[in-house]
Length: 470
Image (cartoon, rainbow, N blue to C red; front, side, top):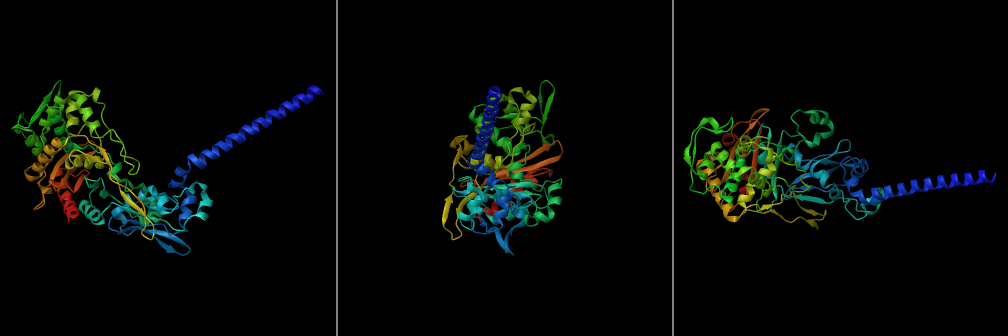
């Protein structure tokens, strides 16, 4: 009997110890959720509790830099509904807010500010709603609604993207992606929008990956000068094609032979042979270092949710593939935002500012709650080299492939690109900035399957430059 009692006591202790262990694990997990994961869960776009609670208060407005309403809450019965006055014009950047389908864009990223649920007690969940203000805060963007609308109209019926930034601060002035959708109709039209093969929900500025084509040649020109593989007066004889052993041939567009030309002339006419030759002179290691210097391997932060660039494995590239990379082709894929940032480095004395979209958070009474200051991100090149490339890009627009981007009385710098696309017609590109002697706006334009950058993308850039400089 005594042995049976001892065995029973041991089993009870084991069960008690097991239950206590499970309780400790449960408490640890609950603490982890409440403390470590609380911010993530509160801000998650599919958090229905937060979504439904936000319907019972007037969320803050999303405003452009001048106070133009991009999103606001409208009273409907006993709850509030989000309204988007600019509809599809700013859809991907502002986003949508739906109880059924969650949130996107600024509506998602800055939801805690918009709902006023950004206090130190927000992790208390439902209890926090009893202890905080019953209204949200306004989010003021760096976006300029006039420039945004101009860029949207400039793209017309094309698929593509336009992004304009202030190269001196990194402030995003316009971020347009097409095709687009109307966030006012997100609940009614979700099935059509979400299954559309043209991906209207995709923000092509930050999530679209494209071969940059000849727009990349401005960076290769800088690398060639930095590494002293060519000087400004040196000329290279450019035939209609460059034969690269053992069996690769790099051709000029339209098989045009340019003869003896220097670096500035080569950029103006966008010679593939010239820049393919420079890439071979640089070699794979210096090419890889150039991409690293200009930040193509680094993230700009979570706010913009940019996808990473796709760079080749430089150490395994053959000479033909290396030459292709030097003219922005091959396996290289980048976002339009990256190309606007590349252009801005030559506009801003060799510095790249971190791109940002939100300028400040304000209370409903206009009181300032939080500001976002410009921040230097990288200095990939020197002021002297930046100035050299700046002047070369001016020539591209003055009498090269980019003349369609020119503005009367304004010095415009740019570079066109026609990027071959394995899945269809070539993409049209333009990157640049203006005024070149006092840059206020840098731009990247990508038009999918549209052909030549000089005839398609450059005129669109011209419209955006004009609107941004008014």
